[in-house]
Length: 184
Image (tube, rainbow, N blue to C red; front, side, top):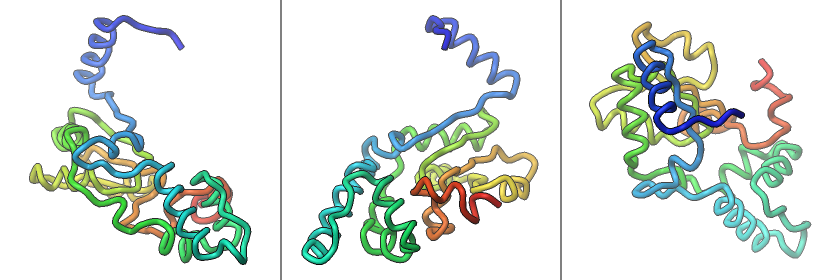
């Protein structure tokens, strides 16, 4: 990857903004900043492991430490949504107050300062920030949903799914990438 100087980066970003071709990619770090302070994947996995091992420690093998390995374990058992996401992952872990980053992404989407945003987050912090700014974020988890948005809406694509819209099909495990509904 070619590095650029700060001033050059500002010029490129401004040109992209003025040419209506600026997009944003958001990840989990966005929602970990205060005041949201949502837990990291490592913290979610540690809590899930502690709960599982306390419940099944004497009768089953211990749960792996990593969230991806945990999710794959339950996905292979066809228990990802029913056991892992509903009993081992805290349903309130994705709730909180939007932080300045959420407000910035929401504001830029609402005023079309950016043409699109893509996120790996399953929480609804950007959407909540949009409502607090008196707007509606045009969100979708796939191209079909985004295609239904009004023409003047900057789309917000949630590539891992949305916890409140369709918990059962949020993407947590590598095996889900080769299975329905992801492959459809």
